[in-house]
Amino acid sequence: MRNLKRNMGRYLGIGLAALLVLAAIYLPQVWFALRDAASLGRIQGESLAPLMVAQLDRSYERDIYKRMRAYMEAYTQEDVNCSSKEIDPENESLWENIEQTDNCILMNALLGWQYVTNAPMKGLEPVIVSCNQYVLMRRSDGQILLVANDILLDKGDGCHMELLIDGVDGTVYYLESEENNYYPLLPKWFDDAYAWEWRQVLNETYYTEEKKREDESFASGAEIYVSTDRESSVYVESNRSYSGYANPWVTKAGITDIYCCLLTYGEEQFSWSMEIEKPQGEDFYYRIRAGLPGVVSPIPEMNERISLAEYDRVHDMADGGPEEEPAR
Image 1: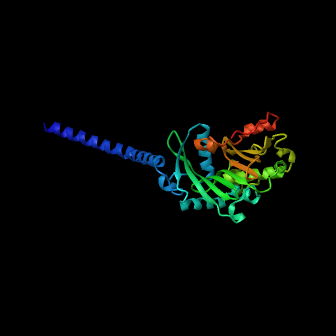
Image 2: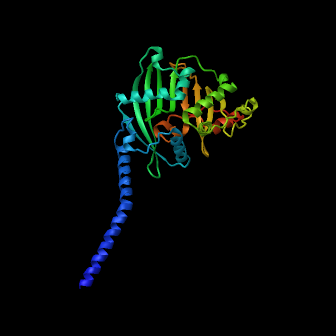
Image 3: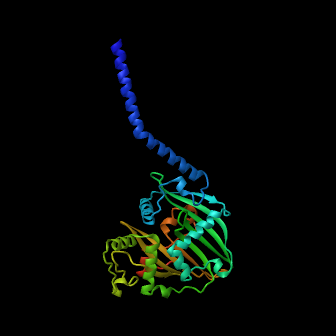
């Protein structure tokens, strides 16, 4: 009997030790899984403060290159899910988020070249009409990829602006603006240097593979070679490659002038488009749309009303394919 009790005690001790080992291994994983599930539940069930993403998920990627590459990989695998919630337009943090676009190279270029004007430049005060916050997650594991605020502004003078911007750093993913400036002429886009300047703006804004490699080359002391042969950078006529990256394309579809380029991240490439149209019978002179179709399309509310040109489609049109006006 004593031996039996000793054996049972020994087996019980071994069992408890095994349970402690298993708990040490798996309990933290279960805890973090429950925490992430609770976070996702709050994302879907409550409205997020626009600048409080870090408190919900510390893994939100601040590095733009890594953020865009992770998102692109999920997007190409059709592994993106979208959750949305309305944000009170009176929320003061929205203005803080909008002010962050001052650090966005793309936004500064659009304003500097007067493709877009904001109300203060005309002595008017813009008003936030509405805001929806979209959380784009990897469907397979619930990882937050992008958090973006879709903000509609009344600029006054009969013009409106829509901004889809990152809720953490103000990176512009999509912009639409009604303007009463002089119409930017498409022939200027066909200027070789001007078209490539826009491409560089995009590389700098979204920190593409090309920008990343340039930084790494400068950091290592290597020289950067830039071809001065204009034939190597003719984009519409020949579509020759430049340093292994796709060229911009420029074309026209009905009343819409289109500039389109590919952004490269690793093995994947992502379209960026800018469209300018001059519709008849509107209070404004022209409308400009610019942004990433791959970020807009997974957002159901935006995908229903926005259709930006994709690079391959513009490529076919510039090659002499049938022209068609972009669907709206």
